[in-house]
Length: 582
Ligand SMILES: C[S@@+](CC[C@H](N)C(=O)[O-])C[C@H]1O[C@@H](n2cnc3c(N)ncnc32)[C@H](O)[C@@H]1O
Image (cartoon, rainbow, N blue to C red):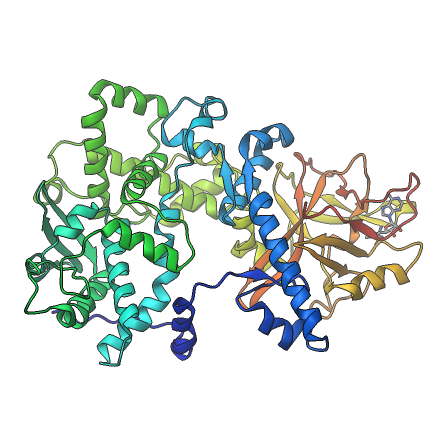
């Protein structure tokens, strides 16, 4: 038996984390602080309305519930067809779509759905009306990520021989079943048929745990990680024996109900696990499809060729090939740094000796390598020579991306990518944005010019200053009348925020001439668009205003953005962008 070391998270939150899964509480956002709350009445009592009466708090709870209901009914669903009409700019629309998906909005007529069906480019918007959106592999596997911390706590308790409640044991079994279905794409009937002897006969090959599951229809060979194996082992050694009863015939199955019978319905168990975490449920079929789609979309085989290949072989064999290629990828993960599987290894693992899977594997790896290179150029499109240098640094010996292709594939980062981009985070921290210079513009005072071109969508710099939230920021803006353009007031995520760039130099950069505050106003010639982001700094999230290029910006061009000034003649009013987060 392998000794597995798992890092436990939330060690001192054991009790409260596990309590969370006991009750299925609605999360309701507090309309005072705009933060989601699991127990709003308690929160209001202790934090946001501690000085008010209980009647006032009850009324506030009702108001919040109504608001949540209204949002669920109307606000959570977006129709892609409507977005196409309202937001004609493709790049911005895609960024918005990405953002909405990431935040769990429900997208009607999602073009991804059409992509999954490999329909021709351009047909997506017209043909997707009839089908529900195809979830991504990430969506399908979300429940494994979300529940992991709780499962690690149960796992540790099991190993430490501590008491684990009955429902926690059952939940742990659901999780183990979900591992096999959602991570290793086993069919529910195969998981149901999985035998204790299959588990006992598993072998450890170079850190991967190989096993074979015999179901009535077919047998499936696959290998799992040591970490997943540790979870299944804890179930097998610590939970399953407690379920066995002399009076029941368990048929030697691995997964048993608490009455000691083979589990009846793996799909229902998965649904219950999803319900426990308030997540939409995904079937094993959706997970398998998502996995195939992912393998395809990360392959650089043109969509047309894929379609022709599928058509030639007919639907059945093509699907079988895709499944086999999925198994091939599980056996030989294609990362940017992995070495390609040799013919000997491929055949030893039971795959055909020809190059078909090998070539597809290389395509997947090439796409990953391109992705890796592009992730190092998040601010602006790289030059061919920069990509060549990055490739050289990686010292790949074969299957190298072509620098020109990488340059052509550059796209502006989505908001979610920007919010965690290490380079942008460093620039905000040290205020050493490159490609910018100060210039005197006479009556306007100083302004900022581009010393390098910026492609549309590039992140140019931030509007730096102390962020003041709520009424205090509004008061600050109102108290300063007239010639004043260093307060950036806006409304985002339901809150009033004000960036104070008037206090200069700022506390955090006493010696830096921060650039964002020097950018002048123009409503007609604006080439920058301010965007509100919640940047993920190592010490936590923070509100930041970033400027992105609205169009390609040329060398020596002055950078300008629209302060949102209503009056015709600009007199230096505070920047006032109520619409920023709409
Ligand atoms: C955020 S600052 C911009 C940098 C400023 N020009 C400087 O020298 O520090 C805003 C101030 O710049 C000036 N300004 C900005 N845009 C202007 C414009 N289009 N016309 C005239 N003055 C402008 C106004 O004095 C305004 O209060």
